[in-house]
Amino acid sequence: MAPFDAVFVGSGINSLAGAALLAKDGWRVCVLERNDWLGGAIKTVDDLTAPGFRHEVFSSWHPLWVGSPAYAELKGDLDRLGLEYLNTDVPTATAFPDGSSVHLSTDGAANVAELGAAWQRQFDEFMAAADVAFGVLGTELWSSQGFALGRKAYKQFGRRGLVEFAGHSLLSARDWLTDTFDDERAHGLLAPWVLHTGLGPDQAMSGFMTQVIACALQLGGMPVPKGGGASLVEGLATIVRDAGGELRTEADVERIVVSDGAATAVRIVGGETVAATRAVLACVTPTQLYGRLLGDNDAPANVRERARRFRYGRGEMQIHIAMNELPRWRGDERLARTPLLHLTPGLDGVSRAVNEADRGLLPAEATIALGQPMAVDPSRAPDGSWVIWVQLQELPPRPKGDAAGELDTGAGWTEELREAYADRIVERIGRHIENLESATVARVVLSPADMEAANPNWVGGDIYAGSCALDQNLLFRPTPASPGHATPVERLWHIGASTHPGPGLGAGSGYLAAKQLTKPPLVRRLLAKVPGLP
Ligand SMILES: Cc1cc2nc3c(=O)[nH]c(=O)nc-3n(C[C@H](O)[C@H](O)[C@H](O)COP(=O)(O)OP(=O)(O)OC[C@H]3O[C@@H](n4cnc5c(N)ncnc54)[C@H](O)[C@@H]3O)c2cc1C
Image: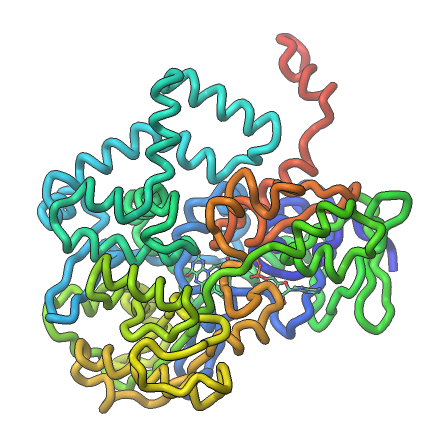
């Protein structure tokens, strides 16, 4: 087989977007995926629960992708290939145990009416520094661009202002929320969103992430691809194929071949070798990269040791429900129109559940992220029926007990424990949706152990491929010994959720690596600045 310019290990969004960007730049690329589907956390399945019902098995919501620079560059091609995004003006809400609820809209005035003047104040405050905030999340920090961002922030804020900005960014969500809003409903609306950043509401920097999300939801709503995420995957794969590239499933890469300090090929289980003349990009955890794919002599000992100590976060459970009726929500009529809402007692409820999970306990009252994709895209099931996507992000990878004192966790995540815990959650949802039980056709549950089996990046069921605590985030992701995307091995790039800017469908790491690979040489960049030269 003729060698490829670049070979990607794994077909997550970072690989697919990176591969499409390189393909558009004239590279011939190959994407190798061990599973029998492309897309990693993007997996759209018909009939998971029952015939006619289409489910997003894992990720479902695309605001990060739609707001990403990768999408901005690829949108023209993806539009031509038929990818279409649908959106809503009521992206999120929280329903409390007493049946009351609080709602967020894409209309700023409606949010002020719902949450008071404090909403506008925090929005304006964040937006004044939004370019720096989003810059931190979209820049290769250990690079000249990172340095330029620092200089720009210094110019914009001044020395004292910059220190204040940095200090403010370290606030926990609890401190930021209680400082900003007197209304506890606002705390209950935003605190659960911290979980979607891989943090808990009492962790450093979770206040900053809450602000990012609060403003992004108002600005961007909750876009989903018509027909499901598979259409995005297919669009990106088509861009790669049209440029002469290849994407292969059931190809488990077991070794990155290193010659004279540079990555030159990968070897697939079974012995086949695929050569890469310009780059190998691995969309994997540091654990796998330095513990499996590279040999002991390929990377410095301190880098391998740091990778070995890379920490993983809490486990996750997915519950998929097919209903043969529309849901009859108790309370506010907007609940039935909201694509992604949370059921929780509020900030302290989220905090308690996180703490229980961190101590190895099944939370008594886990925060329920309840998705209704059909509130945005009615094509997912027949008229008059409904699909529910549930995510629980506060579960112990290896349970030591049950905070409610009801379930036996002695044998770990068995099928029995998984279904019993899902029963607890479904019973709580049933207090809000009065016809949930009677209209349920089928349900499918995935435990943290099932998640880990689906993707080696989700160690212990951690869907964010590594704890996002400050010491493993931003400048330090994936590890302080090898931050960013270049690695100690020449021509080997580390991408994926374990690397900066972390998890999510924004494809940030694939984009940043592709940009570095396609950057014109220094001489050409300097010449481009000379006036009068073509
Ligand atoms: C259940 C769930 C729900 C989520 N919901 C959302 C959401 O709604 N919105 C959002 O923005 N984000 C969401 N996220 C987060 C987001 O989906 C992920 O962070 C992101 O998709 C990760 O992409 P990735 O590029 O790191 O690769 P992954 O999606 O992790 O894919 C990596 C791929 O590499 C393959 N692989 C690994 N090792 C090898 C090897 N040696 N050889 C070959 N192949 C290999 C794996 O099989 C996998 O398919 C969710 C994640 C999960 C799991």
